[in-house]
Image (cartoon, rainbow, N blue to C red; front, side):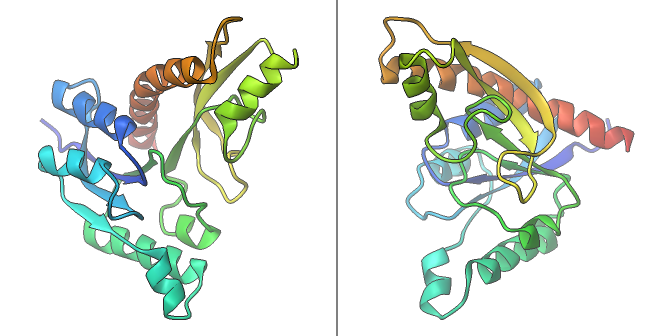
Length: 204
């Protein structure tokens, strides 16, 4: 059997999408191996999920860099360099990574960084996408929202789309209902998107 392609996952929070990736590597739906989980928050629960699955973890603090008089770009370069030198991943997946990456970070990975974003292409770029979609639905501006998995470029949420999926909004939905529906679809799409990305790397 050929060596599995290697994946590093970047997280900032509870890591439910990370868990979906872990489960998929364990049951064979995702033909890759998560070799490290990196967080910019030391209390991120996703780190516990990684440890439970026996995956090495690393934490980096932007505040520490700023306290030393360094910049966000210094931080990005340090994180990227560490990931590249220690893990040499085939694919880097942003799974709830709450930090916009500079071109300096992306330059280390030759277009092999993937992000999951809870909106359709060009619809609600950046933060609070679900809240903004819910509000737009209430105003009658949209009939549904969606999710996309895309390549990461410096222009936030504008990279090449790998997969996308519509998510319905129901009349009686609360914001929490919509969030829950989106997250349940996210857990499937991040796995499917990662596999499509890994397959495309094999063809290069």
